View 1 (cartoon, helix red, strand yellow):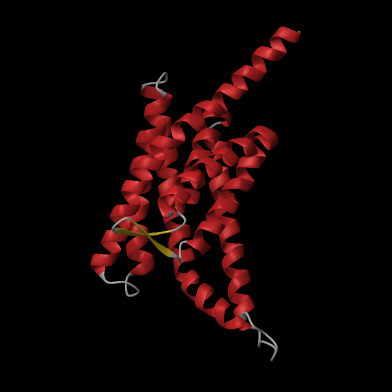
View 2 (cartoon, one colour; view 1 turned 180 degrees about the vertical axis):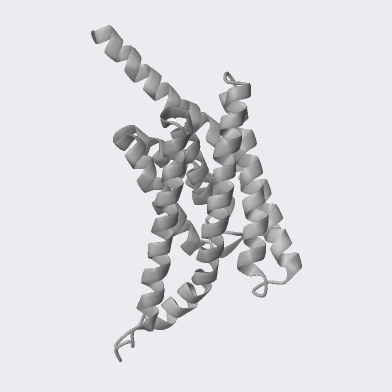
Length: 230
């Protein structure tokens, strides 16, 4: 059941990424990246089983942020991609400050949420700090590799998309796992989670390629229609 839900989630998440850009242009991608990263930082606290492997949720949403920055780089330029990452980092900082401030309030005697929030957001603080650091590093690497490959082999969109995303995602998974979960899980469990996550990210990166082409094709189609009308 988890595998089926994962496939459905990939299709819905990547479709929504493309739709956000289609409707709102680069501003839609700014919003999408920030939302995706914040939600991913929350749901990553939940572990699930995929066959014999254990994984954390959030991988698909994190992957969608790489798809979004690749779309941004391809259609709007590297400067806009870097700006989107900085906005996302700022959004994560707001999230951390807001949730930690919420925990400081003394709950009412009718409160039913405080203990659950403490469990979630106390762990989430470390995860979010680790995520901010690794998100910034890995996405900047993704943008750098994407642009370098584009300059070398401009006709191979699938190549720059897959190589840049697979390398930066794998780096993020291992370093993030060590930063976020050392002391929470044993080293073997962390390596299992990060290795499986990296394999999944590589598969997911390959699956996001048609959505990148779809986003680029929409722009070309729109231009052709305008030209025809004129």
